[in-house]
Length: 316
Image 1 (tube, rainbow, N blue to C red):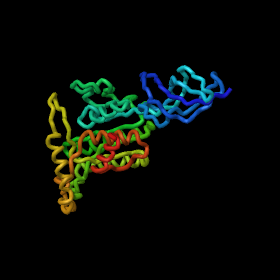
Image 2 (spheres, one colour; image 1 turned 90 degrees about the vertical axis):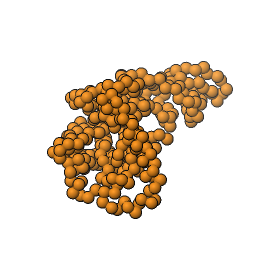
Image 3 (cartoon, rainbow, N blue to C red; image 1 turned 180 degrees about the vertical axis):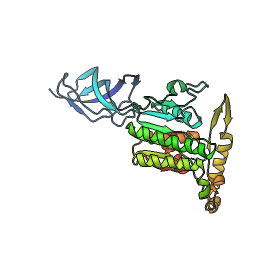
Image 4 (cartoon, helix red, strand yellow; image 1 turned 45 degrees about the vertical axis):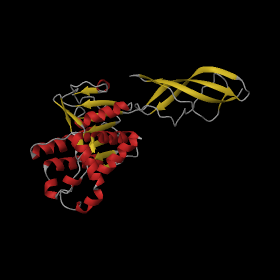
């Protein structure tokens, strides 16, 4: 016997590591046909509904639904079992306890993305609700298993040799390890070039970053993302103290954007972007990372303006 019905679903799904309950709003789905009550139903349920992201595994989903048949019969709400492939995400954040890295971890868990931080300092000392939802490790061994993306915030200052190792060599090794492990995506936090003359860009800080960029785009030509922010502002926590960089960065960003039409003529001058490149919120950098993690069409080099545009997509 064939019964044609319209259905409204409420679903609960789980995986090996966690159980999540998620109710979908009543959906106007296409009418479906069930041959009999015991017939195994295979259907793509509410494909346009936004479900939290987890790793790519088959999940068991139990849904309850109410129906109205074409014959006018009223059917009570009953459970059905649906097996579905649900895309999930797990990111490894290199330097995840730092200023930029912690913002990325925070943004990830806010969107249901599993976040693992690798840093020498391990778990940050401050207390926040999102901190408990991140896995904090200081050991690389076995870390890449099951990851869908690696995000590197590695970088630092020092002698030319030290900066080449931190900004360049360390990132190159990370890209190589991720590529060999079959990790689908790699996202690098690099730096804006500030329109500096070439002899300054040959310093260890910039040359190291550009070397890392080349490795990302070489190993991940269709899924590697390089973000080039300028000065990044936000509330930075250092040794238990909070440095409000946003008190400087936010007004400066607004001023430079408002005066862009007047200062554009100066942009061709060497080093002009040291004064004219607008600062970027750390939340915008984190948002651009999340956009790259969740959108397979996103890859390549992102300028300051493009970072802000990508972050706006995530916020919308």
